[in-house]
Image 1 (cartoon, rainbow, N blue to C red):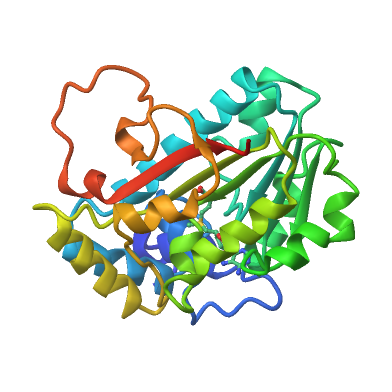
Image 2 (image 1 turned 45 degrees about the horizontal axis):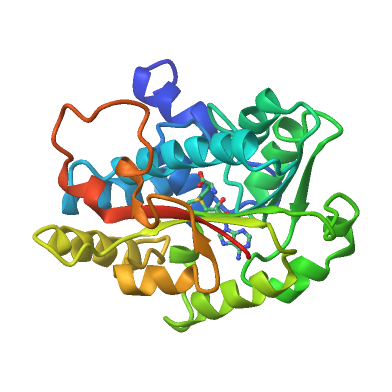
Length: 283
Ligand code: SAM
């Protein structure tokens, strides 16, 4: 049905599949792009979105709240901490406002190193994220702390004798190994960070209240989807990810409530209770 609206909309990305990319398998980065209404996703990725929307019609709020937190957290780090180097684990596909744009608007000399392992992110990231000489894109596995922190490629751009902003935003809930491993990983990462560094984390939350059931339903859909990951952890489990850090006020909080851009006039919806974030400083 060439020429029809359906054909055009399906062709928006499915026709230009980069070499080495399998459009029959969902990818975390492309599913996230679909949640954000982006264009770099395939039908299999949109299927994951539709599945989670069956569990909660407002499911896209997970991504929008996460991205809002990312922007506010990075703006805070750039304006208030004096930090000039940002190490971003799991960058995702380029979107409306990327970390280097947020922090280099405050300080044009800030260095940003993006890490991801998705081939589509790699293709688009190298083209769109490496916009200037202070912005770099590296392909590596963010669930291997030692490899990341000892990587020569990363150390070429990040000075480990100076404080670093270390970012794990919307990433650790996609680790599909043992439940306690992300907290261990963060402790390993922390050992490499110099004193005065800041760590920002956002993560799916099981709020353990009347919204717990929707968190469990979304988790079930994510885990049984063609993407296969998305763990909702309790507040106590999320606090463990910040072990050894001094929390910046307001501490671990719903992303929607972490220094929002303005007063909250509308009540939060059920999904906004299911994602939290925070920033801690290494003493
Ligand atoms: N950090 C961005 C944000 O908060 O908007 C993107 C979050 S997106 C949900 C998670 C990203 O982590 C994806 O781009 C995915 O490719 C990447 N990722 C997942 N597992 C990874 C791994 N083992 N190594 C490197 N990147 C990974």
